[in-house]
Image 1: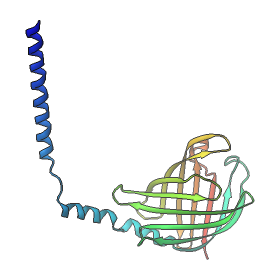
Image 2 (image 1 turned 90 degrees about the horizontal axis):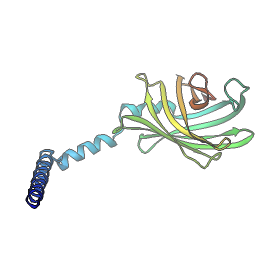
Image 3 (image 1 turned 180 degrees about the horizontal axis):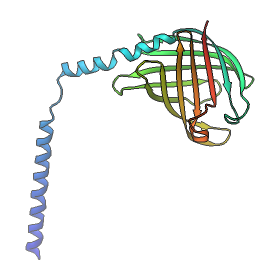
Image 4 (image 1 turned 135 degrees about the horizontal axis):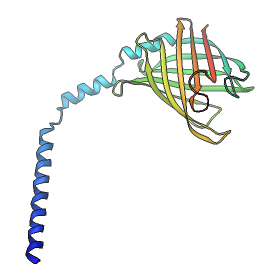
Length: 203
């Protein structure tokens, strides 16, 4: 029994050494990029490209009409007016929006940033406003024509206690002087009818 135990320990040690040696050889084969290669990749990731050019069509000041269906898309919509200004930020890497208007009879102000992540190959965005202490984040894609941006995110509903509701956001460019933003409460109502539609008309 003692001899068998010794043989087992020797075998286990041999297997461990062989495994570690194979792992070390595998690591040697995966060559680290040179400093020049890393700098090139970093430069590609940080440089604005064609996807960022799509932001330029939004730059300017806009009159805004917002329609909201508080009780679901089949109910009656509340309508409010406002204004919005879009600017390019940080060398064209981001589109900044400042929004002011009214919501549910209260003054409404919000700020949002949209960008394109070269490394992640996706559009990304976040939104904050005075009607919440939460930050909305979303990500998605734009069609080849650069006219329809579709993004997905999650939201909490303090009024009902729901958390992590799936939301779809669609921005459609009608022409150079008009675009429409639609929000879909996918968890509650699906993707067919929006619960909010914001129409932007260039001033």
